Length: 263
Image (cartoon, rainbow, N blue to C red):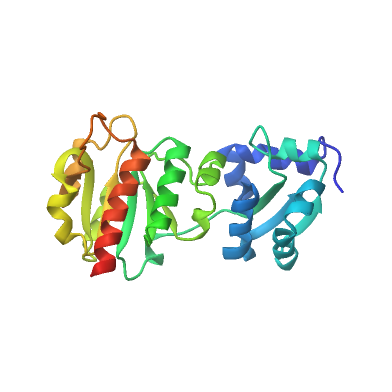
């Protein structure tokens, strides 16, 4: 049992909150029962370490069984040690360390639905879009430009384990991504407030589609919009001025999912 918060291993894991430390070490932190369970279920070979408290063991024996069957080193730690390792103010008793996720466009095949997030900076928003894409049955999520780091602790938590269910691809060049998708017969739809409304294009959404979402504050710039096949909006029927990014993305992705499920 690890009880010393000043233990070098404990400090090293705490430093993984920094992107440069994650990239140097090639690993990132996964925190909380749900995210750790999904990691152990869908990417067990990537798990390096699992640390848990006694209270966690009493409530989540099934997760510990998954950990014991994985290649990971599994250690009990004190509450104080876990508090140092965790990114949250009130940790939920378990932290895992896993190898960085590494997917590329070449991993995609038979594309039906993709979410492309350009210049999305808020990790909570990015994680929620990934979760919505997963729920809608998307084949991948692609983060382009200066979007938030996929392994950011807040993004990992907001995805609630969805980052382990489908490929999440980081690619600097949005134009390259759009060209790659269009060359494979995928229609790229830019989500914006002033486009054609989703109901007006519903009949075409049963085709392979990539939804392009922009920055939370200023949306997609003119260059990004010009890359798309069409600009599409979520209609507002009530008095709300707009929808936030994650909500709008969920509506768009599910519009395609509904159309494709009927196709």
